[in-house]
Image 1 (cartoon, helix red, strand yellow):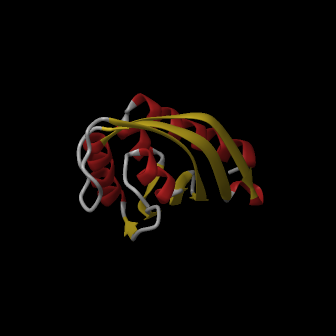
Image 2 (tube, one colour; image 1 turned 90 degrees about the vertical axis):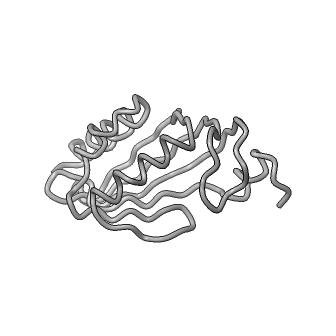
Length: 138
């Protein structure tokens, strides 16, 4: 893949996210995708990622704006920066109670690309900032 192909893949991935089209998002991933959750565990496989998306869909309504995608290493690596505009709609396990709190925070991700698909996604946002925005004293 070229840098341009990788750039287009990441744009497709985020366009699918913003549409809530989980099937199209999953189509961008390798079967053995590695997913590094923000300040959390590493998960493996497309089916585990599907479960992650179901939890996200249940607990959060999010749109990513101001997305900037960078790619390099001959299309093997990419990064993205964006601003998350969200609403916390149902309590997520281990997190504060949800009551429809609205939040806006910057985030980013790093990607490894293999055979035309995303083989690794590492997500980052400032959890302390998110907690403050949903009303938790930190």
